[in-house]
Image 1 (tube, rainbow, N blue to C red):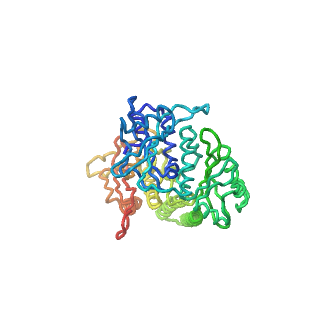
Image 2 (image 1 turned 30 degrees about the vertical axis):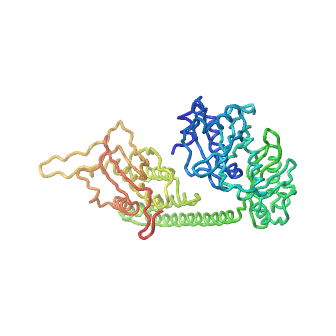
Image 3 (image 1 turned 90 degrees about the vertical axis):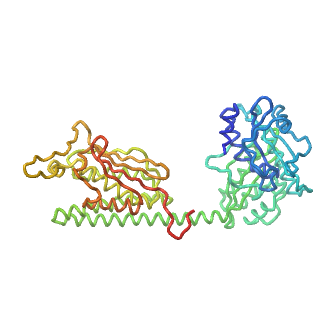
Length: 530
């Protein structure tokens, strides 16, 4: 299904600013659809001959839809869209005409011109038309609630035609809450309540207000109800701002252990402020769950912090033991263990500062790479460079991957650029009467360097560790290598990470280690995958 932007750019000559305004309408028009008990269809002109294209549609949650099939993408002309042509060309809301039939469903057509106000605040040209189509199959005498909904809907429709709806969205706000069915309060120009839906009345009752809302000064009521005077003042100021024609951000009111979210919208059809519309939602349970999650997150972060501290203690003990050991082989083994423990501690340190069980891995790789160059036993200065981004990785992948990279980076530095007295390790022993075969030498014009590359492709993480050093020894077989580091790498990659690893000669010399790790973790056996 093509998006609104795709359809508009492909079939019309609308400017980017026009399309952005249509996006804002489509992001906020569920409110108008619910108040109207009607489907809303956004039509844009395609040709000068009166042909229109439907680029967006929303169905009401308060009434049956007039269309069983989605209308987005339909291009229609002729008598079927004559009402759209009138609204577009004359710039007025069209409400004339008899009901039309879609199969066995009778529907009433209305057409609302869409304007984008100019930088000077004046109403601009009509750029599109909103079709408001009501299913009449369940028509009956409207209740007081329905009459208030329809009256408010007509005011908002006029504001669309004026270019003053929807109001600007504040940073960080979404369009998901509150909605018409959560609770609706209508105010007159003086801020007095003229109507409150039953759900709105229930929301205020939970805050401790048991009387009927009609006739109350809502701004003053918010100040009285709020447990925190600052919250009450902000909520009250939001109501007053809407009465002045402004669009304030959403506010929360806490009282008696309950929380209510409010959204105030100005009502100013034809540019005349006539009051405000206030949508309310009881979000008490949502906030309780939020607080529980915050407590849980804080506990998890504290656990990671303590694990990191314990790992650092273990590393310190191993380092102390290494200093007391007289055997060089044992000292080297202990020092390698210190580095491995420290690399795992890095992951837990990052998790202790994160709000979820995932880490931004690039920073960890950079720190591990820097440490590898500092502790590696080599006589040359080796540069480290990262190419590409690992992105955010789940903790279960990050912990194993950081150990793998730690081993590979240390191997690349120590064995790709060994001290001079270890160079003979790269030469195979000579047979009797034979001249030894020399290992490839490092090009002195090249700066010793190790590059870590990463990219994601089809839910797989591809990683390579490449150096421009001496390369692999002749007849090297990674599967039979006896070094503990390579054994750890193979075990982690094929076991914990469920991936693959290949050690090979680099394309231009040196050594390249290539890892492919799946990012999607399989569900345990016996448990359905989501």
